[in-house]
Structures are given as C-alpha cells and as structure tokens.
Image 1 (cartoon, rainbow, N blue to C red):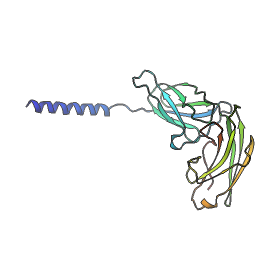
Image 2: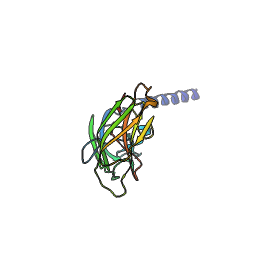
Image 3: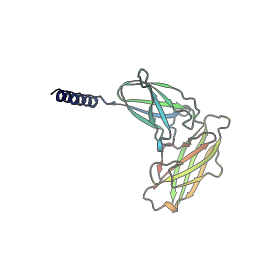
Image 4: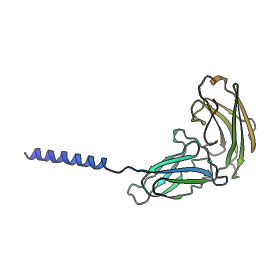
Length: 225
C-alpha cells in the first residue's frame, strides 16, 4: 500500500510540474529594429544567410546572464519576441561592415517597440538600379565613403545573382566583379544566359572592405526576372 501511495504521489508531482511548465507565459511583445548609418540614416545591407550578422540583447538581474541572439535580415532589419522590460542592445564583436565601436543602446520594451541602431559604416551603397536586357544584366549604383579609416579600403565590388531572394557572397548562382571600382558612380554588366532558364532571379551588389570579414550590401535583393 505504501508503495502504491508513493507511486501516486510521484505521478501527481510529475503532472503538476509538467502543467506548471506549460502554464508559463510566452513573450508577447515584438521588438522591431533596423541598423542604420549614423550619417545618412539609411539602412545598412548585410548578409542574412546562416545568421551571419547578429545583434545581442542582454537583460540584467537574472541568474543565467547570457545574451539573446537577434539575427539581422538582408535589409538591415531585425526583430525579437520578448517579455516587457529593459534590455541592452549591442552589436557582436567585429560582426558588420562598420567601425567596431559596439555602442550599447538601452531599450525599454513595453508592447510592440520600434528602434533604430546607428552604426558608422566605412562605405555606403545607394541609388542601385538593375536592368535586364535580353541576357545582359546591368547594375548601376553609387559608393560613398562615410568614414575614412586607414587600411579600410575597397577590396572588390561584386554583382551577385541568385534564384532565391537570399543573395550574397555565399549564396549566388553568378557573380562578377567591377573592373575598376571607385567612390561615386559604378556600373557592372554580366551575361546571365547560363541561368536564364530560372523562373525567378534576384540581384544584389556587395562591397568587400579590406580587413573586414562581413561585406556591405545593397539593402535587400531586387527581383530582375
């Protein structure tokens, strides 16, 4: 009888514990943000695939003091589902095409909250335009140097094409480097006949900066077909 009673008690405790876990509230507030240039206030385009660029959220006062990873989209936007409260938002160390100042922003989340995280990019891309004429794709765009830092020069400028909306240095079907990339207006043309049978194609421009792992990209990909 004692064994039976203990068994029932143990089962009841297990069920209560399971129900208690199931009854925990889930976070309901959305933090929606965008990484922008401190100078131009424009969105900074990055690589999204494989969680390449991330932000970190920290919240003080908890025993397990670890960061919450926040993954950045191609167009520089990011989002996280959170409990209401005060958080610290910071970029990861050496994890973006900008000066590695790692400024911390205090964010008070109360319901849906929108913020901007300013950074200092070495360069910015703007006025991009993609034109497909037959099997020839032509990209025109401007490069502006926003923060002149020694040894942070343009290493290469590349036009990328992929058959999905995710386009970057790792995920592409075709790519072509600019012959003489320069500050100001640039043009790159490429033959896409080898992949023209794809139903949809997307294009994007990336800038590799010397000494910086992550490329700067146009903010998001553009469908060209």
